[in-house]
Length: 508
Image (cartoon, rainbow, N blue to C red):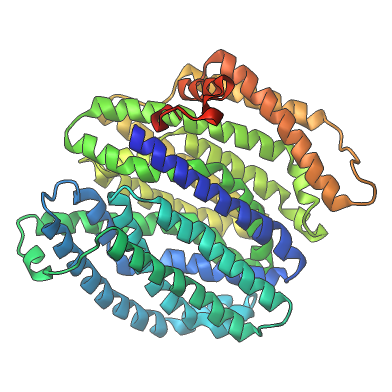
């Protein structure tokens, strides 16, 4: 657990700093200086890229993740790297041609409500190329148990560069076309730095692709990669489809508004992303060794901590909703229900622990592909039915409903095949504590800390309520002993060892 705690702590810090930067500027500042249409354009370019990038990657990064531990020498990994980079290059060329040929029907989809996107249709091609190779190099860093630097580049460096770029555009130092070109160059720059880190810091090598193709495990590994390709496509469509369909029905402006509470609701899952990334190699190794008791214990320990953190963040988020929306332009209040719906869905997703990771690296991985396919088609159907009827709320409902059903299916399969799940009596305890905290925060009146300064009053109210929520949540959680890890950490703080030093990293 030491390597998990060290890398998770570093990555969590990076992720939260990145999220904080993103929330402050993309969620609260930018709606006041650029139009919701341009915010929607940025979101559409990013989300369309995230959906399409899985196609040319062909599941090869997942093969590296799955089989790196069983490759006994560095030569096999180097051979696979060479094979992957070459094959991905060919598939990206095929993708670019296909995407260009599909220009007419895709343009027709957005022509009526999102015309601002039309001149930049082809920008998606270089974005997909950059993202495809970036994701492969990030997976390479993951198998090396070094996820903090790639996370820093993705979550902080990229965001800071985009923020600088948007300010230049907002204050008319750049025109629209220069802004989009700069948008592309930001991703290219961080990608080049990632390559440098992988080659110099992680000894990334790529040679001998023909030798890999002659290996005994080539066919089975490619079959696994094909399954993971389907899984990635299904997951990406499910995760980002709402942001693709919404502007087709309601326009880029609606997407620009919708994405603000969507991001806030997804903040609950930041710890899950950090912990799951570094837990994957440990789970994979335990499954390879058929040590399912270790998998069960790891899943139980991480699941209760994830749900605890999720309940705490959920309580603060819901308890501060009115103050949060007072920081937006008035028109954004129509998306308040989006925040509630997304937050509930993401909290429940965290409650199911590492069910995706367990199924992914077990011999039953084909079931998660099936379940992801069900989720994708369910998401498509729900979006098409609910967005025209409920607008932004329909998109949020589509995301949360399909996510919950997906988790139920995965948990059922794990219990059926491995006879364990992550739930305990403490889940109910955390739900009751969260309801108590939200109830108290609801009845705390808004305070005028500073006269005639609505912005600072909102921030101070959020800080005041959050401090009260922190105390109301932690005190009963500590005394009920929901999480031994939390209690150990609090005792480390109370003892003063955390500030004096003298503790081991494993104690955190």
